[in-house]
Image (cartoon, rainbow over all chains, first blue to last red; front, side, top):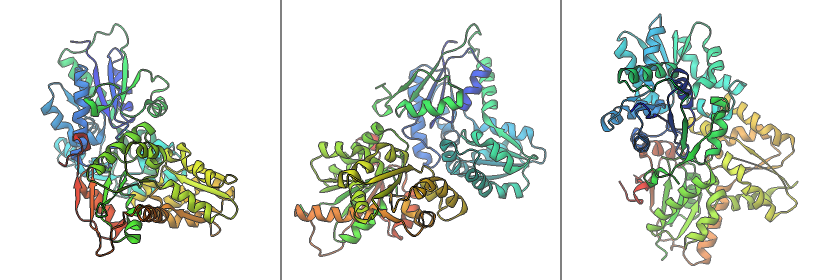
Length: 272
Length: 272
């Protein structure tokens, strides 16, 4: 059992920030990552469509015998997590619950901001998760649709990024939040400009670390951890041709991306 | 024969600018529009993936017995047009050839700029089309990945849009182009800021009008025009739920969007 891999999926390359933290915390584990690069982004799509895509990808990963699934995409975590938990017989971990837990742990004033894609924000999933943990929290949210294309364009610290950050974040700043959840796996790339805009009094919460901790806990409890004898292997599948994924992904992981394969999910997830 | 509809497709809502011009030129014609809203955008995806999506959509429209297909998406026109022409037994019209024809007609200096998505610009399709018509033209191109999200966010005339336009267009301006092709159906929404950035000496070319003229010519030549007795009917199909398409589409067409249906192309194009 314990040599089964951890499955991780995202709409594209962003979930690699979560993979990085998992391999830091559990270097001995094998991983299989799926990036749905042919259908990215999920953030602007309807819950029904995102849920369907998530099911297709999970089926593909379950056929590869994973022992645990990480939904490393905030939009899919927001709209598809409960359905996946019901439908598949393995532990399923999203990024929203861990992000919410961390936010509640670090806030002093109880005023928490959350930014993400339109899909994530519309779902209110962070607000619900935070309120479950801390019913008196005041949660303020804002969709920032330009942040993903800015991160992918590499405009992470120029004047356009600063102005966009101001336009999106000024309201949250004025409202006096002391904690800001980066509710999209791309946003850590814009950390500098977001931190500068919000000022030194605001703590930024990146879900990736807390998600990795949750994965380690669950595997330990279920006695599914692989013994730490050697480093794990990492495989990557994408739905578009791998070139773009490899180029951007190397920025995320530091030049370690190998074994990237393209699959056609429309043909029952068989590799093409 | 002449009561068959004109089929039009785009990755999303942008192609409605082309539909609008076609219904202006040929108000008696029925149209069927397909917006691939579940898989939008195409501009960042590989040619192979865009070609596959284009074939799926064309099959869907041909099963609905269209008499002519308009590929109202620059990326798909750039990478999939020749394949579609070979594979399907109806006339297929893209937006690149008409845009190139217009640019060559209006340029005085022969220095022509082209802006579009990464996919369109990488394909060099505009450069080739312009050079075929005017071999001594000097064609300068630039991908502007932020323009589509800016248009969809409605940030079409604010400071972020102006700075982004400057960052993308300054080089073309400095190079002295006198004509700029808006090589993406979303870009007409940013016409004001693009025109201001380029200055009064530069003519902007929007392919939609010229594409409508081409459609009228082909239908006339093939004797497929519908007699102008009454106005045509317009049907819309989308691959994601219709709400977002209707909301943004009404801005494009002025509140006339009805009969929008969702289809699942993965299930052989049967309606769901």
